[in-house]
Length: 419
Image (tube, rainbow, N blue to C red; front, side, top):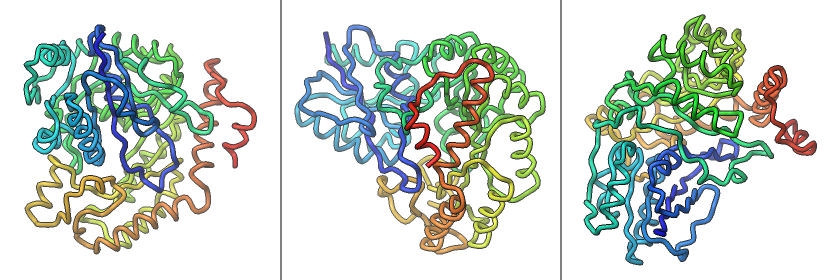
């Protein structure tokens, strides 16, 4: 039996967020494509300790975030010093391919299904591993995307105050939009690729956890497919979180019936459009966590203060504030490079919690100060724990109502949720 170690490097956590860890999605999708003749050991460094002395024959390095790449380099160099080959893949590898290719034995660019990863591992076994496997925009058939391999996860490590965190799943890949701070268009070619509904239902039904996070880039890309998806999900009685859902009465009603718990809704101004979108979600019983980007060129100090006041006024359930960050291969990065506004390329500081560029209407220090202001003011009168507790109790009540509740908390842990 060949021993393979799959590693998800740790990264610097955002200090303003509560300490919790979601089970990563990329590694479980990758693990589903590893042939059965490999014995897989998975290490998520964010919740577990990597033992470099434990025997392994080959290492797969899965990196999603830019700020994971410095640690990825350390891991790769350690294993390679032992004569063990390292193959890197994932979103961050695609964004930083030139750099990462210099410190691993091979990089895999693209999606691993349809036997592609198996072919790479066969090359490794036969000592013909190539420096680069480039499948950029050469997508495998979407029908080849099967259930992820969540058996590699230690579920006990992904809890918060005794509550199992949501499991991640995707019903589609790609995104037809091209938002200015996002690299999805570079990675996915602006092509929306929905999975067959029966494949999605099969995977969702097989997940033990009752609470999920659909990590699709957007649930606002194909109205008819959404109606079919929600109708198929409803009988499963799962409860789920997602990125924005199409703002349409029938769609929102069907999403609620299918178990929509809350959505991450981008809120970028104080318009009536934003106010009404939040109101409509809440009217359909869907919670809202505002995803708020700080630092675009139209913002100054007063703008951010008004935006925080607006979030409190419209009563979003939660808010997550991020500083605009010029990640590689995004439209905003091209603009900032042209204008000479990027301050440095220290990837460990590209966490969205630190200013790494020159804002247009503020100094870097002012934007950093307003980032802390936004977190402090929004959660001043009601803590993150209490706000999350309200959302948690909302889903519990919904589960009790449809007889899908799975108790996960002991009494003393339930009390902690209200502390």
